[in-house]
Figure 1 (cartoon, rainbow, N blue to C red):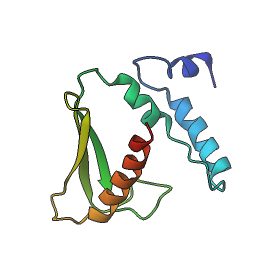
Figure 2: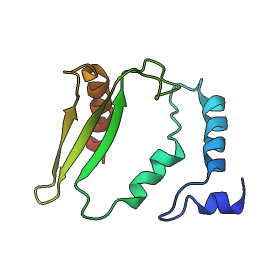
Figure 3: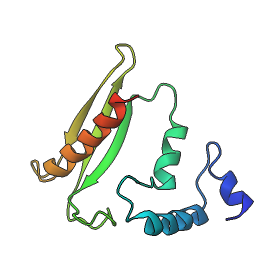
Figure 4: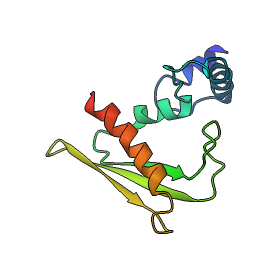
Length: 120
């Protein structure tokens, strides 16, 4: 990886493509490890660009059963994390244009996010 690629991870800018390549290499190497999940750089980098007054985080969800390729499903919906900073609370809302077609995937995502949030 180049120095510019590493610098792309620092601050409010787009992550260079070479970082995605490194992610692919790491993911394939560590895929067999049970307690290990390598978060893609573009996902990890996104929260660094949140503004202090951001109140909505949008999570696209699809019904793919291919966990290695999240973009191969047949239907997309949206999970929204609504943050109420005044009351220090948050809630999840699932928007699905085909009545609850992605409910299982959305519930799985929300369950995992709740586990992470509760530990913060």
